[in-house]
Image 1 (cartoon, chains in turn purple, brown):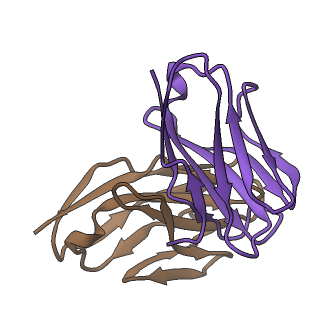
Image 2 (spheres, each protein chain N blue to C red; image 1 turned 90 degrees about the vertical axis):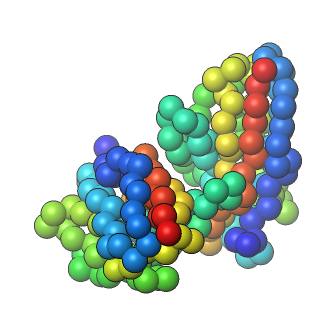
Length: 114
Length: 109
């Protein structure tokens, strides 16, 4: 158990809908990272927040957004969903504000868009 | 830009065989290097890491050495077990974490 929690574990929705994925980092970690894992694209970095501020963006679509709240949990919002958004979404947490430190991954949210 | 190239799988080995999974990287700076493992139905777990050239990371019988001259970080284990069956990801971190495509290892009794 990494100490990172993600909810929900599974999500099934329809095209065009909007969903919110939630992540709670390990106690004491200020950084939250979001990743998408799909069969064709592999594991891709989406976005990084540190202590409430966005620090870096990766291959995140404009239809996706994220935020980190004062209690340090983070939410990833996916809107206007398409079939191709079906994937595993992981969050990870770390102590520092750069990507160099060890990141601890949650169990993931499996999203299926029908 | 930064990238990681990892040996394609799948890899199937008999128990107690020697394992090597190749990983090479491209980076503009001096990244930290990691191996993560993903067991079926689970998230990624850090297996080992190295933060500078010539460092050797090791854990659970696995090891990898940060080789700056060959830009490599190959994963090795002397004797694999059935419980090592998983997907292994090489990754580098400069400002963000870049993953390889993953190598699926299956160990058969």
